[in-house]
Image (tube, rainbow, N blue to C red; front, side, top):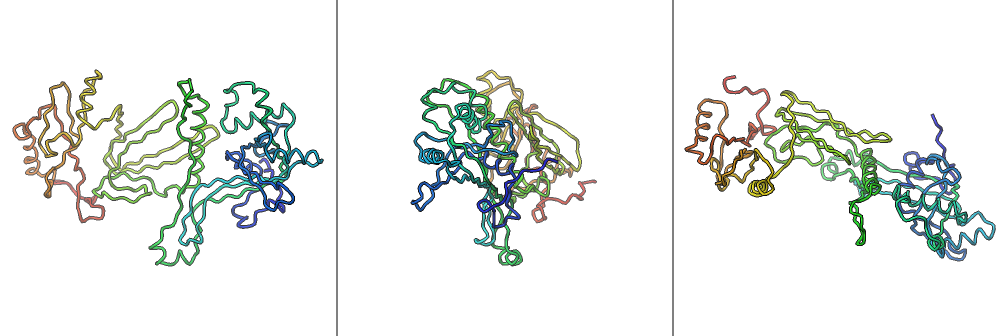
Length: 462
């Protein structure tokens, strides 16, 4: 196993509070946190007689000009982007003229990953990643190192961007821009992750536990859709910009997934007549749809698991150096596997039907929602213009204000009466090409634990 290189813990960089849980001095951790941040906060003393330090937000990146292939787990310098007349550049220049290694600086970054809400306001916190470097900032005067550092900084923000922009930089641009190299002498990182650390007394106090919510709210930094400039003439967003957006968001999600405790139970799919459900729980009990979709840059794939039996779904994520995968496992207590593929969804009958005709799109069947009956009354049908199209009723519900009951579906007297309601003389407007799906398909017992019949019930006659 490769030994981890570490910064020695010294007077400046040593972490004191909760160091055993949160501190890290290994180079990979410190440098990775630095490079994950776009803005570096650089602190320095502007003047010996000035009592306050100055902190300036600047663009920066970790790199090693002498060994460009060095990884983040190896020694790195910190390169800072600046302007020719910037105060820090002038102070660095003066320090070098005085024979010093450069201007003493402290470079720090911090990223907030979540808000931690505890039982007491005094134990509230944040999940975060922070890193601090100490070293001496000196102006880069070698032209080849300066160009290398400019490319490093550009590609650190947007990988591959340097090769996509106008080249080479003109003399005026190079003259106006200064690069500072910080020779790092020490550094450290501090990371907090996970739930609140509540006092034992509060956790054991029933009065507190019943009245105060505790937990944490993940905070994920994401990139939005690229927006072209007013004078942009390229119709398509370049691949390296798309890759930046997708890669950044995937990395942010992957890190957050590590922090968020995965559900101890799989997702439960089982239709009951409980319309309420607990937020943040995989065991929702109403309105579940066994449809899963996965997508990537060039493809989509979806699965509709047509199975009415109680189903449990485990979802896990795995990440390698080159790929991120979502893995699922489906378990149903009975039934067969039926897979359906859906091409298009539309709920407004008139818009959908007329639109299909207008665009001359072949369509053999349309699933209808609540809009097909007259005033939403059972066994009524709105008049449709004559087209050669099958209508599939996907929901039937009562429009009356009073209580409506449903008969049992298996006793002969019930089925005979129910079937008679579909007679063409009763349900006027229907024909042999009309099919009905009754939406109230849960055998409800309104005073049961889940407002549903127990699984050991027997059907009529069985």
